[in-house]
Amino acid sequence: MGFAALALTGALAQSPESPEAFSFQFVSQFDYPGTGNQTRPQKINTTNDIAGLFVDTSGASFGFTRFSNGSFSRPIADPNAATNFTEGRGINDSRLVCGDYTDSAGAFEGFFFSHGTFTNYDIEPTFTIVLGVNNAADFVGSVIPSSGIQSGFLSIGGNVTEFTVPNATATLDYQLNTTNQSCGYYIGSDGLTHGYWRASNGTIHAPIDPVGSTGTILFGNNDRNFIVGRYSDSAGATHGILFMPKSNRFLQYDFPGATFTSLNGINRGNTICGRYTDPSTGIDHGIIVQLVRTAAGGVTLPLAPSSAPAAVVPQRPVQIAPAY
Image (cartoon, rainbow, N blue to C red; front, top):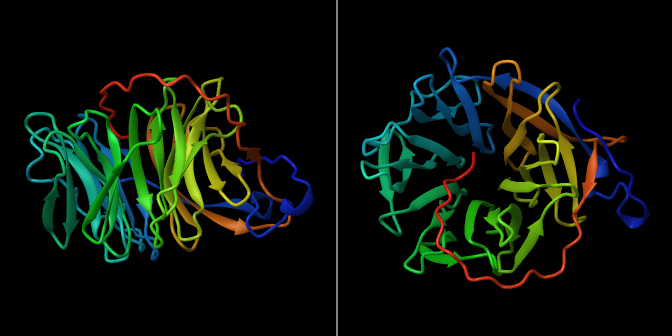
């Protein structure tokens, strides 16, 4: 439901890593308890526990965990969040939740939450956000270092590596898998958002945009490096996507009747969490979707051809609040 396809020919057609071999199967919709809450799932672990955030009718933001049995945690609010702003961003199989909050000065700070205990994390005191964590408790996010250029970072075995996509004015790293492949998005010199993925050896593959995109955000990957996210088109609609790097193709998913769909997290069982916006109410609802093998696949899109290299422009300090 809610997907379409472009045919492939040659060796890629119906190959194990080709989108034509898969389609999406809707599983369920869910909402954090309460009237009018905006529910925004972010990541999903192997046992289908989901971390995310919800925004209540007063505009306050809190993290949450939705357990695999369908029950929810109490609202997750970092005790240092003086502004009613805490976001759950990632979760691993130990139910270690990561995220960010804003302090009394309005600065973004990172945190981890496990068994009722918060541990705050900062690389830089004015802007550090933690966006994803894997089962080794290695994690990724974004930071503004002394250079002033917002950078992605990985913390692997306690060693922190900061990086930027070339010519980007901001880079945000959203998730890493078991082999430390990570993905995220950046702001290019054109002022638009573009997806990227980073290999475990540090090689950055960018831009990752489907044809027709006016802005792409990649949120999560699994151990097969299947990558989920969303893109916007020239008509103003936003579509969920799954990108398969081995074929450089996308599979598109749209919740029926919605003009905004986002796929945010994918686990090793290819179960995906995300959300759609109800066009009649403007309320965001969480969804769970399963990627399944199929004889007749869904809508696929090619990778947009790389444009001629843009002129190198001076990087300017910017601060980008993370997308969700």
